[in-house]
Length: 104
Image (cartoon, rainbow, N blue to C red; front, side, top):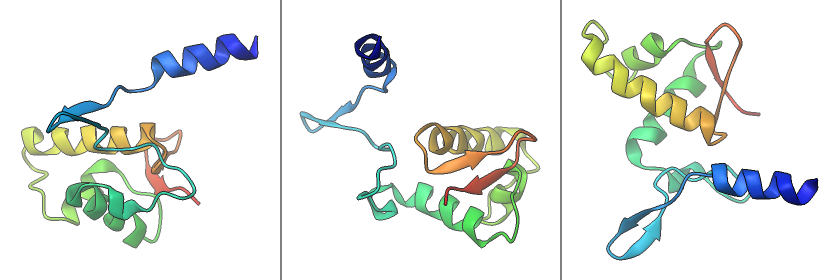
């Protein structure tokens, strides 16, 4: 049973992309020895914005902090995609009400 779960996790894991002929995952899974400086600068700014908030925040509030024009939906949707990617990889935590917070 544990082998089957391990196989399913491995097949569900995101595949790294190719950059300069090398396999690279731009947004790595969060691990204890991995620092957020390994993330691209945009993602580092998003994490800093969530961390600066005194409480869990919505995507719109995160967009207001780094200066994204949140009045235009087309500008907010890419930010939502980045937030989902950070949640999926373990860098952020999404609460049941949709708000985001950093992982402890």
